[in-house]
Image (tube, rainbow, N blue to C red; front, side, top):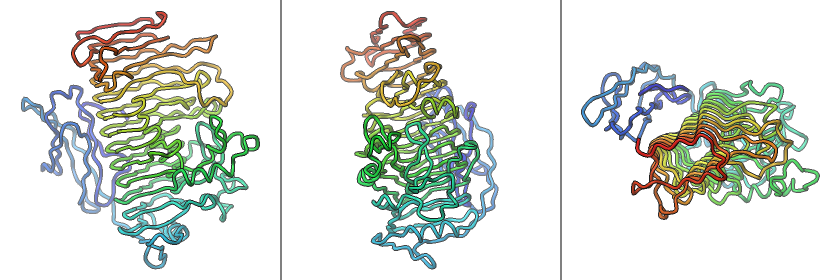
Length: 532
């Protein structure tokens, strides 16, 4: 995804018979913008605050062509127009209400409805809709979505607390090669491909013979309802069964047995053209939304709640590409967003990067913030984070890897954000794989027009050194950055083993300069331009 000035587009995978989502790229100088005007077929339909660069168009007619345009209006009365985007809506399709005949799922949630819901999914025609209606609560184990369908949840989908409801117990031939004798499915967790419990909602499967093949396409999860998982209670039950640290060594995670066997709440594996919108997604047994070897996933208008969940990440793209998340609120007990690409040595060998990720117009008000790494051995590049509030988190933006990882993280841009802090560094955990032949490479990281909210975190840049080799963090630029917080007199920007670092107009809220700590003078080519 390469964006031009005021580049308007329809967000991938968001087109339906009656709606779509428009997104557009900020102008380079956002301070001149007063607002954005949205036009449909030449008529203005909405004026948006300049902080919002997305809009959902609803109430459209099926099989109808529309033209859309965005105009940016500046404070001095001038305007800049996008090109016109022409879109034709889809046809209406059959809706299968799982609480009605012939499925009769228990809308009270007192009895298990897995079979009824799965039968509706299996029966769903191409581009059809499987519906959980408002006021219905459905109890379910693992569900398997298929290509060319919408799962619309306007009530509550509640996950079973029984681990046996998340294994393959029938139709084994369908999953031959992708499941084991225990009924676990081939997945990936903390950088390793291994057999795990199924998630509550699953789509696609992992094909180790061809990880680039797409095993499920054109999927939409939508609605105004809730997806509620089994949380720690379910996750703990899953772990107990695989808690023998010798027999199940691969499921160890930092000394905790069985941790990697847990299912997620929503899992997409080798999927393409996915849209997640509207729903509240809560209380996963581990990570909440996990995308493995996927291409083109759009997530918007949702909330992710996993506070108190062990390892309760929010949105985890893993060796996936062309991803977009916006208009989303996080309340997590771990990383809100964690961008990954596998772990040494397996991640190096598979070599599928996560690339082209656009994160914008969202709020993180707890948890760890945005993490890139530490499982990044397949590489991570082209990450754009815009117009986000990342406040009261533990780290803000945390770009990290272990010395053993190899791989790279490059071309990361953070623009027009308020964020707790920036930490670019090595870590000493999650190290149960053989070393990569090279140290990680971190380069081309840009922070522009941002506020750093926590002066005690501020900025830390520390490269890699395993005692024999060094890999400096290269080309980090901070341009027009203001550091705020309670202890501004103690603010420091710390650097170690870094190269080509440029600070332009970086200052504290009172206009004074932060103190630079260049540990042991290991930072080379440090450029300071305080007044530009």
